[in-house]
Image (tube, rainbow, N blue to C red; front, side):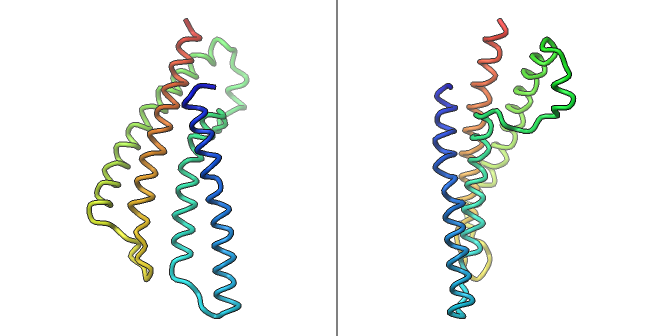
Length: 158
């Protein structure tokens, strides 16, 4: 496992605890709403933000595990000599897609930070700039990882 894979695994493991935090926040909200008749304004939005960030770093984690969905019914029927070039093409397409996604995400994050965008709800949490910035970081990690996998694929080929 290369350094980028180890980093993605480490970060993915750590951010997965955000889902546990969401469970705790949801339990808190239920208690506040139904036991104390005092619902919160912020728990729902904070939960969405935490899930979004955890989800973003789930992408690099799954990429390092090579666990993304494939059309196995077709792919597994192909001979190895056909699969290898398809794997390289797939990795190149992934890199190009992630670069475009990262570029667009960076533009949106910059705009969000510039105006200190908030949720636009009663809580006015500033989660949009945070989530958008984490999206850029997650995509950057996936780009590094896809490039590392592509380089390893090309080295194995020669």
